[in-house]
Amino acid sequence: MQFFEILRIIKDSWGYRMIPKLLDLVDNEKEQQQQQLMAGRAVASLSLFSVVYVTVPSAEIGKRIAHELVRRRLAACVNIVPQITSVYEWKGKVEEDSESLLIIKTGRERLEQLREAVIKLHPYEVPEFVALPIEYGSEPYLRWISEQISDKEGQTTDKKETKKEEE
Image 1 (tube, rainbow, N blue to C red):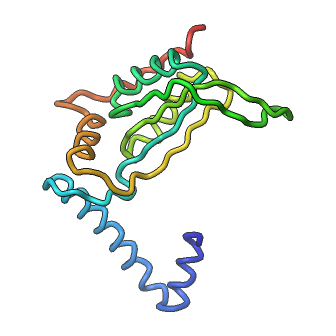
Image 2: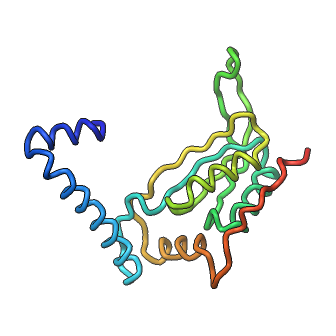
């Protein structure tokens, strides 16, 4: 069900006055999740953290991208699955290629910066960038992700534009 369909149902059932109250409930839930995370409890982390899939032509290119993303604090961790086979249609022809897969752990607030960095660093014309929410995770790991992607002691996230992969 789409977001606006839900709002229409709420409006039809309870009137417009309930919509701001429901949005406040969502905001309160997010705030409670963040407080639980800081208090050391396991937490359902809807919308706080994400796993991002990015395919790359080789593990070597994946390593270069991964190091840059972690250095810029856009990713806490990047797993590199060295060899996968991708089948897809490109420019009217079915293709099959050997690629590597990056599995990137980050915070929702970093997704746009992460996407922009991947596009600049990636050699493909149309790089894959698919983000999925982490619905639940261990508190120590989620806290670690949060610490790794946050600015440390006055440091700012490096937003310098990095050259496209030199090949």
